[in-house]
Image (tube, rainbow, N blue to C red; front, side, top):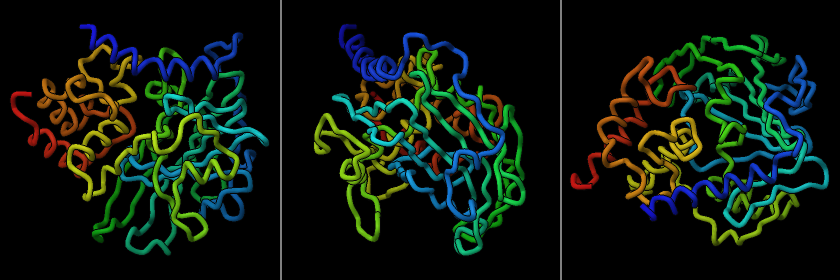
Length: 332
């Protein structure tokens, strides 16, 4: 019992630290930001927006493991106020300065085998930090791909594309309402970023033709302050990298796709699952939930997991998790 209590505290304390650092004494539950009608008002891209070329002052961020969203691709950008830095605290979690903007654009390559055919931009989601609170806004791209407009509610977009195996695919992509996004991005009633944790940013990237560590690159550019050395930060595996073990890949997949809810303080914290990558297996609850995990992942409709962000079954993800669960000791 003491070990379980210690583990819960171990998971909660870093997140509570972020909330304390990023929270104003006068903050309220209401949004602090007025989102303009047009995304272009934020000046995020230069030139033709469909090319997704970041404007000056925006930095691309790449994650090792990424959320599945009906096979959509994503571009992630970070914008900081001049002269400020993201601080990686002693627990390896980022603390953002006031005025930070996190940008995530969802798109499809029209042909994944021939990317010269271009992209179809679907939506851009923003997280803005004001008065110590994160505010979420969603913008839907128009058919001309020239502008994205603020969307207060949910909507659907029909998408057709050709995948890497030359299969013609289609999906009625669902753009969630901002309040739906909050259901995953919340911790104890506060909105927090999910993907850009130090463990998920600690990877090799290509910048100006050179391969280098992303955290060290951001530090050298003056955008990041590290309270701990990079060598002390674990590396999240890429769940699609078959060079990694099936255990590493599966745990990474469960972290990025499920742990935002299945953790202490998440919306599914009352369930018997704690799926963060760094939680020891013996404390995850995976063993006693093997059947339920794969059944919920494989079931379309209202019983499907994850609950939001997908309308298609992720066949590759299901295969990965099924293989992992079968590899576990039946006694565990």
